[in-house]
Image (cartoon, rainbow over the protein chains, first blue to last red):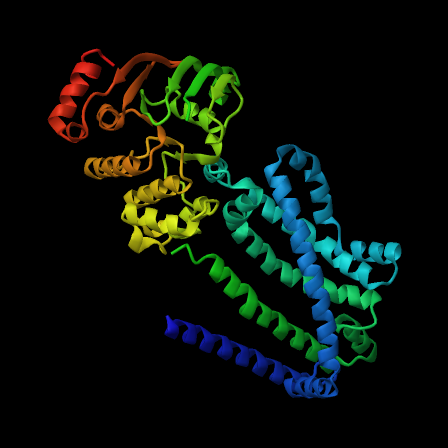
Length: 251
Length: 242
């Protein structure tokens, strides 16, 4: 097993190295400041890191991602559980959900800024609203499939509401919540950048907007890569171990 | 402890198979169970035995009639289902603890019960790692963890090989000898009913009626003697075509 991990890691590194070489060759061949090579991006990266700006803006963006992510997961999961366990509510609210799912992210963002002003609350709300319907739909499917047999067991032994939720229902929803958390993280951080670009004066999205106006492609890529690394670390160090712990009983 | 009185006038289901027409599951079913008695409800599959247990447990409240349990019984009611119904994401110990934790000595109780059903070494295993027989033992330990005054059992030893089922029946009687409880045990197996019950209620027909009531007069030794068991079943059940 250890050698399998090592093998797949070796392949990942080799394929990434390959991509960097292609980028390097292409940049050298085109020779334009619109396509900087890896070394120029690395220089921009170290400069931004040395000045502390990179950490500040990545930190601000990350804070927005965390807050809106947890907000969306909490509200979306509760909505999903309620709809999945209540046929009448589901029939009534289903069309609302379809509407919310198909509402373009940009529309929500613009409306939030118009209604609530160019504020932090508006920014977080806009991101959360974009993600809530996805979470709700995924968790709803899980809640519909909750075992009636275990439910009866919990009722016969008088588990009560909280004990039933914690020990009987949530473990069954765990795979669904984990799936929407992983796809959610990817979606949320992309929307946060748009929100920042349109109406915030800090964060990675704001910086990207700045570099766009300056045509500073090297810094633009440096920030993008910094954020990709952060998101990958969250995936590897938080989401994956959590999923493994939750699935320990499936031996 | 006073008796349990069951008086079901009518229990209907909306049946999908008959275009939503009602299916009459139980009708005019009336019997008492004195405290501490072991009653076996014996009848063919599909005659409404599980429905009866669900009504007594309060899982289903849509019926006409009355089921009177002595006060406090619902707080100490255990239900062993046809399948073990353990939580697969909790260890065997946790499954038993979840039911025991309301009790004064919850933690110690679970360990003692697991020891009693021979699962002491498997306390930290997940149910999926155990054989069906072991899962049934765990379900039995869980049932006793709530210190039951009333124990409902729905063919709890079905789908086990005969030897394993008999061993579990012995185990059940041994535990009950130490921890008294009123038991309503549903089965379609004559030998099982004779082996366990103080009294057998034979159900037949649809909707089910009580066709006979038989007091089992065998002593503890005779119950696990196959000849005595067969003779009793033949004279009291088979000879009367029950």
